[in-house]
Amino acid sequence: MNAPFVMTTDAVRLAELTQPDECARIEAFVARQGGTLFHSPQWLQAVERGTGQRALGLIAERGEELAGWMPLTELHSPIFGRTLASSGFAVGGGALAGDEATAERLIVAVEELAQRLSCTSVELRGGPARTGWDLLTERYCGFVMPLAEDDEAQLAAIPRKQRAEVRKSLGADLEVSVGRDEADRAAHYAVYAESVRNLGTPVFPRSLFDAVLDAVDADILTVRHHGVPVSSVLSFYHAGAVMPYWGGGTYAARRLRSNDRMYYELMCHARRKGCTSFDFGRSKTGTGPYSYKKTWGFEPQPLTYAEWTVPGCEARDADPLSPQHQSRIAAWKQLPLAAANRLGPLIARGLG
Image (cartoon, rainbow, N blue to C red):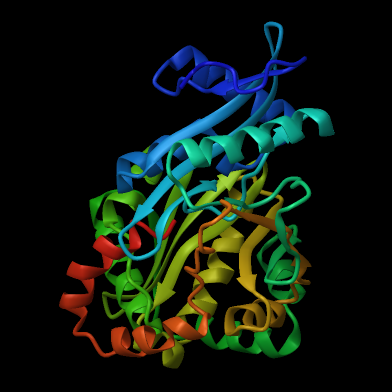
């Protein structure tokens, strides 16, 4: 499998991610190219440790020089089939290269690799695509905004209506903590698991969160009411930005406005850590999270993803907004939390 795919100016091969020197070489290339956290081999390896989904990657070499890189996760699900994602469990990825020709070679190579691995499709969550791929330009939007210079300025930067909600949360009987230890992780997982069950979505295995926390610059901010966790978010720090990534609240969160408190406190905490921007992540266009982020003053920026289905195979459909999944989502919302937490990770580890 490590033989070159394309014998041209650039040779493309599978990366040897078990080799520390190879990973260090890729990490340096990602940094030079301004890649995302999700281009990092550390991310791929954490996902593999946390979910069992295999970390892969394609590198393009020009002589001894690394000229291109595509991070990959081989996702296998008994429900949704087998696919290659760049990157798995991520909102970013795709080919990272210094020129279009090299990116093209990486994309050709990933098509070939998908067929070798009996995958039915490939998903590129960023970067270029090529003719024959389906471009998704309106499904998702990203939300990024600079952080203000101090806490008061941060509050003033929030639009009036949402600022009023934050002010109410600041006057509520809520406690805020930030950390990475076992108590922080347990509180976060309990809140997050309840939050996604209420949305009708299977929860990821806690091992994924533990693996990522141990691999990258990340922490957990939790809001408690009378000592009980009601909102919690696991956030990443990369290239001067904070990214609240896995977060949610219990049923009590809306009444207590603890999610509003959580995101404001995270903005202030991130600035004190040296961050200069707040990356609110992606949301599907027109959904509740999309609208909520706009109330904070974030302007949606369309994201371009690309999908390719192996000829003769059916397109993968793991979109929770798809009509065929609505009855499943409705049923999942009715599951007792204990049952959802037992079954959810078995399903969600294959979603990616």
